[in-house]
Length: 253
Ligand code: PGA
Image (cartoon, rainbow, N blue to C red; front, side, top):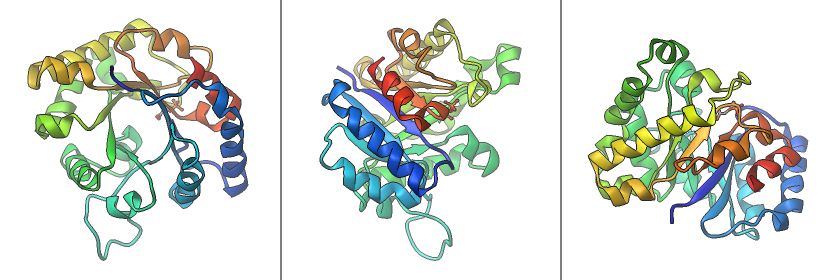
């Protein structure tokens, strides 16, 4: 059975007090969430809170801390960067790699992202690799080609064993932070396509085991419809992860 994962990506939000109350709000609901080995939650806060969160989560076995990014370099004179090794040493288990905001604002290419994945895996972090088409690509109807290229140019360079230790997140750029969610049918169609590509590249069993998350304006309202689709194994949630009640409702869905 593949893992179901809800990841909260706080992006560059929440000051210290807000972060603490958000975490407390989620911990209060921990017992209601029905989590297990195969149904887990990852919270990816801004770096300054990551160790606080991973320490608090030690007593909550199905909550994990995640990073929003890691450096493509191993260590050394890279002012402002945070390495996979530093992240892993803070009891963090996951790292988001290739979010469209990193690709767009920080010019991260698939080549750079592949280096980040190698760094992360070397430290036993699990990369959550984001892919997804732009609005122009969707409107032109070439979104499958767009996504296939992102896979080919990055994660499909991994061996089957390496690929077995990543999570994929499909995040259509036009749905991120816009309030415009992909319909369950649109999302399912792409998830199925991604799973098929994994099958063709590696094997049926790897395709069946890969967790594929949907991200882009997931809310408590639309979560259960999206998660009911057979190839959608959870969500990567931005805005709605900043409210404990709403995020808990998404986890329950
Ligand atoms: P959103 O962000 O839920 O605010 O649309 C999703 C994401 O960027 O991961």
